[in-house]
Amino acid sequence: MDFDMSSEQDALRDSVRRFIDREYDWEKRFAVIRSHEGVDPAHWATFAELGWLGAGLSEEAGGFGGGAIENALIAQELGRGLVTEPFVAHVLATQTLAAIGGETAGPLIGAMVTGETRVVPAFQEEAGRGDWRVVGASSTGEGKGATVSGTKTLVEGASSAERLIVSARSAEGVGLYLVDAKGAGVVQSLYRTVDNRRVADIALTDAPAITLASGPAAQAAIEQGIDHALVTLCGEALGLMDAALWATRDYLKVRKQFGTAIGTFQALQHRMADMLIETEMARSILYHALGAMAGDDRAAQSTAASAAKQVFSTAGLFVGGQAIQLHGGIGVTEELDISHYYRRLFVIARQFGDADLHGDRFAHGVDHGALAA
Image (cartoon, rainbow, N blue to C red):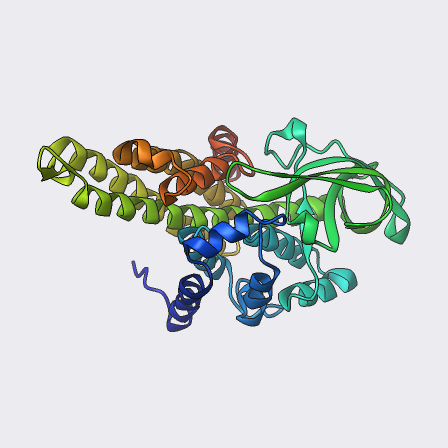
């Protein structure tokens, strides 16, 4: 099988690498994560200018003709650079809106791709522990006269967003609603996660909203958005794992004990081999998921996305943990990138559900496919 990227995809990946080399070195990153917002607004404008915000959207949806591969490539390089911009949240929002379509979603996507508008999804709740299908928020009314009440958690990018896409339950089932992020009935509680991201818990009290979709259409849009977000998140995790692996290799070549580089010790070589195997196995499952996302079978896409997320949730923690172990005490310090790789991988392992949740989703998808066949 040919896993080579096209010339356009190679150029896209190179543009992200150049941005990180130029704008996101270690000192600049520390300045960003220590700021109040935890991001640099100029960076998002650069993302839009370089076309990254629409690279993974079809032309019909308002993007530049790409798909899941482009989003995963961008996220992989952002992971290598430990970039804190909420790119995965952007992918989730735009892909959900693309699945909805219509007069409201289309203009929103266009404004998001150009960076004029920031819209973020608010799908998770405390009771769900990452499971977006657990929806306790409620809605009343329809169309432009809807209101939403409830609490959403871990909403990334909320502080800089103009609009929220909120999942809430009505008499027709789960629906999707567009809410003014700074409007009446909306209270944000901002905090920092262990990986230096800024998120918010959002309390909604009869917040005015616009109905985007309801019933089966809303469910289908959420699932499509989640699947794209999962493979993008796995792309970021792969970048983190790659960076941690080779940084550890380099450290073992220069760190000396008993007058010799510790990279010559056979026991440590075996541990490095285990890290490489886990990274390459994860890369392969991501390629499988990207292949499924390029097809038209939605059930296969969901199954492959959950399979990838399950693998990355375990492999990422293994590679990150081994990297810290092989560095020793210095591996947990704030000043070394290894601890930051591990912390981000720790969050990714639980973001949008942990390994158990996606193992169950994968098994259900496989069983359902077998019954359908």
